[in-house]
Figure 1 (tube, rainbow, N blue to C red):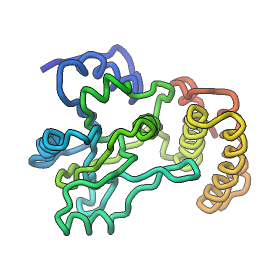
Figure 2: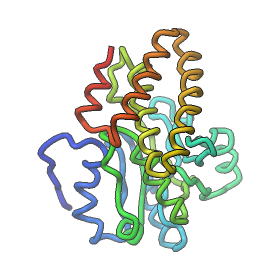
Figure 3: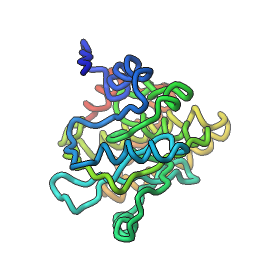
Length: 252
């Protein structure tokens, strides 16, 4: 048992990387597991067994349910869309797969809440990006894996429960979390798109964000402010550091 102590709050990616850099050579598999999860019997051993018996599978997650509502799906992976986003598989689809005894499904996108990777994958393709203090690291990592033809799957025979916390102030959750999430996403895709394509795509994506935010908030001023902030942050930065995260978290 190794206890690796950090000296400060490094955020999700840097915190996990602090440990991964010390252990990735020591073990066949490494598992990222949020500290607000509850595992069930054989959930981890089932994932290990699957990787043992399926050498073409590189990185996996599992069936993640809400801790407060155990029958309700939180996340079991998804896929990347043509318009630069990711879409989760719906519960009806996952429940049907499980009912039919399907053990694993292809899920190009999986969440960092529960992510198990082979040593060979970590050594060849690297670990989590440290460009974002909070969020986006799993999107970036899976995007890199897909571009390198690494097989990513969700193991439906493994179930864990997630208590689903947040690092965004509850009073400003909708507004500030929109700014953070979409700034992260647009900045992240700078790394995957060519400059001219990215600029055109950003304008179209901001139009979709405007509609989404206004539909939820029903407030035109708030919606305009959100889009303005996202445009400014994505123009100014190539990362969202801890300091910028705090700034966004404290937007009024």
